[in-house]
Length: 339
Ligand SMILES: Cc1cc2nc3c(=O)[nH]c(=O)nc-3n(C[C@H](O)[C@H](O)[C@H](O)COP(=O)(O)OP(=O)(O)OC[C@H]3O[C@@H](n4cnc5c(N)ncnc54)[C@H](O)[C@@H]3O)c2cc1C
Image 1 (tube, rainbow, N blue to C red):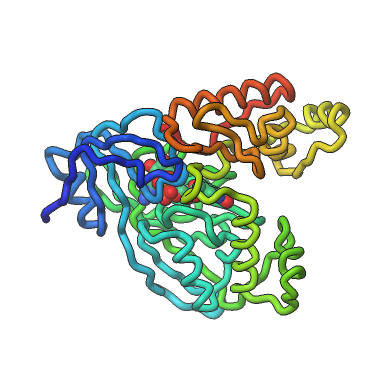
Image 2: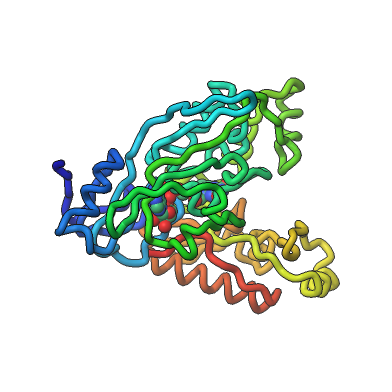
């Protein structure tokens, strides 16, 4: 099998922050077999490796070492149909939103609230992507991944993935061990609509939509996201830079006495507080420092105004973390993957 390896590839177009970085070796992967051939190839099997999907959750603070793989494994196929559900298997390189639109066109429910999240299907299980009250763990069935050490193929079932809030086994104990080649979803033939979260219901009403459909919900989510989040094609960003912290009840009660309007979402393990609110309270919303800054509509999004290097964004993120820690005693954890 001939692998098309490029040398010294500029990755600016391959990350939504639009940061300049150079890959010593770069290869676009179209199939599981190509991946396996690469991991069994004497020259490449022991090289440091970075897998890239859409580059929408990555910050380059330096050039990656070794080989950068761009996942282009395609294909969407129905593999099993039951009374209530359909299993759909998708190539890891398929663009997430294109897949969501495909399921909606087929009348299959479960992913409509996750419309317009950037990136690829293969990266979605990594951090259990979520939005508007839904996470992929809700419709995830299984995935196939190739072992980076020996090229062997393994199926991960739901329980194997240990999904949590913006987390999975691929971000923890199995980090950097696998390349996700295919993901299978269990989608609903009779959709159960979920419009309770965020402004979905309000947007549907504003648009005069009284009879719910997958497409109406997807359109509403797209509309809300476009009005709230900066478009990476216009201004470099990676969406939410930090996770929303979960704090214990005593800490929350203490903060509530000082900040009566602090928003909160009770969880099993504590109280979730929106990181964007904490950052805004520290005065960062709309802040600009040279080439980098904090979005003026959503303080959780750090932006590259053009020409930034990753270190500038990292420094800004650390300053934000320090000020939130000082004011609220809360440590913000980055959601974005640093390279
Ligand atoms: C404007 C904007 C809005 C966003 N909104 C949301 C949101 O609402 N909810 C949400 O959860 N996320 C959101 N994100 C973050 C991002 O879209 C998701 O994390 C997405 O799943 C990243 O996909 P990607 O293909 O771009 O991954 P990349 O950025 O290319 O990679 C992310 C990480 O996964 C690894 N990886 C990628 N592909 C594979 C693979 N096939 N196998 C193994 N490892 C892999 C990479 O090495 C890296 O560590 C947003 C981002 C932006 C820019």
